[in-house]
Length: 335
Image (tube, helix red, strand yellow):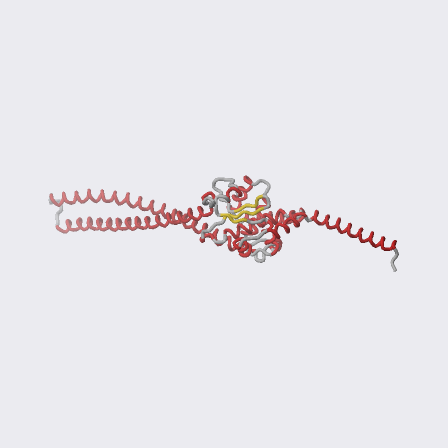
């Protein structure tokens, strides 16, 4: 049979344990405040089917998907997107942004650019993940990122260098944050340590890189084609001009020589019929040569026109793709 004093001691002990548990719980919440806020956000956020498809196609694992949804991602293909993602420089298109803890993605519908939205989603998710790294982990990851960046620079990746210079101008102090997203979604071969790190967020990071390559290669191919065609057009134009000038000079010389021949024939300057026929045959051979030259010039002019049309078509397609990426050309939101 318990005494009254014994019951009091038990009650006091239970009360003390409960109080300690409350303090421990409160301490854990304080230490993990961001995780608690993220979890509450994820519980309340209801992704659309399109947003869910982006996470799936980008091969985000549970952790990556958690950070993605904790950032309440929004897809917007209207001009309203520009209210959230401000363009920093006139010639730099913005495909997405991570602002005030929220992800915004430009909803590109151009089928030629499949993969843009998925890569943008992964890129912005990695911004959210980077900001949640502990100080020690961020220092470790920054070292891995910098080493990878230096390797890329040595491989003459001038586009990446220019891109990082852009971020230095528009987002000073965010170099490693941007490298964290760029390398994670766009670079195929990276160090084993960095690859292991990115497995925290992706079931298959290479799937994201392939999506990036699939649309970026279109721009590279168009650029290579237009550069090649432009060079060919310049060479053809030079050849045509050179051949035409020589042709016109030869025509003028031939006309003079024909007049001289006709005068000699009229004046009986040829001593024998054989001399006459020989001079005439030489002139006819020159005429045939000039005719062949004219045909070559015409063929080059035809080739030039064909390549000019191909060049213009390539430029038009490149401009069309660029316009698809340009959110400043997005339609106004519907009412």
